[in-house]
Structure formats: C-alpha cells, structure tokens
Image (cartoon, rainbow, N blue to C red; front, side):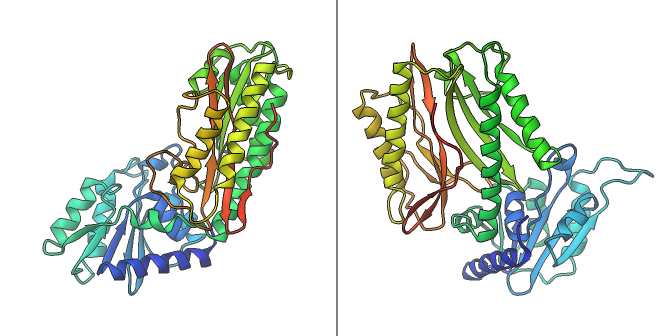
Length: 380
C-alpha cells in the first residue's frame, strides 16, 4: 500500500498549492486523488461504488475525510487525520445509502467551521449534490476548479508509488508466461484469460485485477478488444495487451505471440519493424524531450520499413493510478518529459492478410535514460 509518511508529504505539496491559489478549503472528490493524498483507495467492487468519500483539505490545519462505516477500518491503515463516518448499513432500517445520506453528516461537520473566503472543488469529479451544498453553505465564497492540480502533482512518482507499479509488473510477467503456455490450436481467447486470471489469483491469494486486449487471427487487425470464444489456429498472431493493478497502480504492457510458436517470414518482418520502432522511441525517453517527438520517432521507423499508415493509434502514455495519464505520445501532445515520470511505449503494425503485431513496455524516465520496468522478453 502507499506509505503514510509519503502520503503526508504529498498532502503537504497539495496544501502548498492551495495556499498559492488562495484557498481556505479544497474539496477532493476523485477516489484516485483521495488515495494519492491519504493512501485510502475506496474499493469499487460490489456495493463499494455506492459509497461516498470526500476529502476536505484545510491547507493550514489538516484534513477531514468523509467516509462510509464500511471502509472506516481500511482508511485507518494509512489515514490519521480526522475522519467523519456515516452509517451505510443498518439492519434496523437502511441497507442502501445514497449521497444525500452522506451529505447530512457533511453538512453538520461543515457547520462547525468558519466559512472559507475562497474554496476549490474538483469540478470534473464532484457530484452536483456536493457542489450545491457548498454553494448553499458558502454563497459568498468564490469557487475555483482544482481538477488538474493533483493530476499535475501525480506526474512525478514517489518511491512508494514505484513499489506498487513494480509489483504490478511482476504480475504482468506471470500473466505472459501463463497465457503463452495456454495458447494452442483448439483453445480459445477466453481460455487464455482464464489461465492468466487463475495464475495471478493463486499468487495473490485472493481475487485480483487481470484483464486487457485479447485478439487473435483476423481479430488482431482490430488492435484491441475483450476475449471471445474464437478458436485458435496454428499460425495465428495473438495480441495480448495485459493490465494489472496493485493498490490501484497500473502496469499496462503488450506482447504478440504466434499460436504454435512458428512465425512466418511476414510475421517476423512485422515484429522486427515494431522492435525497431520501440528502440527509436526509447532513445528519446529522456527528460526535456517532447512527447510528440517520441511518437514521431516510432512512426518514422515504421514508415521507413514500408508500413506507412499501418500504425494508426497512439504511441504510448503515462501510467499510475490511471491507465492513461500524462505524458501522451501522440502527434498533438505538448507534454515535456520529466525525470520520475512513468510511461509506456506501444507501437504496432496491422496488415491485412498477415495480422497485427504490437509490443508495449513500461518505463521510468531518468536522467541517464529510461529504466525498463517490464520483466518479460519481447519475442514472438
């Protein structure tokens, strides 16, 4: 999990930013951002996503977490400031709670505070009911949008974040080993997913997240999609774009295998082209370079091999608490690479009559060059 001390340091950086903006109160509504600042990530499985969590940050005196009783103990593992808990299950009269149940508790807690002169909310993530409550309670306080403030802080990963990403990468390696052993003529795309899920569940000792793109044969031209009952044939190209998470932190990688293990010369040529594109992108993964130039280096390598127009998607992206975050390797990106960013490179080539090949590794950007985080070979 995220470490309490590093959560406090992140909270401090966010509080500093709030002071610069002149905010007396910042209301954080994104569950990802609450996790980033406190270590508490609300589970969204089952009834979890029906629960309301909010973080009130008072830059000069700490924070208050509004939380459901169901997740109180989980939050206490990393969060030590004040927590206000509402009852979300009571066999005597209430089994399901809605946001208005949580807001009753929030209203009472806010009523004990001095009205802020200026407050910030994550407009992108804040429920309308919360915004309406804040406007009603603080009608004279200007409200600023802070949707991008924590996203900006999240660009650079701390050590505890990197530890979680590295654990997700270990899971990825097990996933590839397992699905490669599972694919054979007569098996299905779904069989590959089931094999990987079973292996990761056994390793974790509990249910864990494992999914991605599972497309084989002619479906590999679609670039992505969920697994289907399609029956595999020897010689099929099979794209596995695998996703795992650890405490919310992602690994997002891709490999392409050949069912039966005997690639044709055309398939080898596609794979070699993609590898040259990866190499070209890696050379530009350094602080100060533009993300668009990383994309262009990969595109140019593919075009030089005679596959102009056969690389139709993005060339990669950042990873962290979201599967896609800055930097974005696309032609229109203005992102500048910085030390401490984590990112993927995922060039691909898709040719009718042959199929599709894509490869994706994850990296930590350092001053001495990219550190490859993905511990699994790239071969067909």
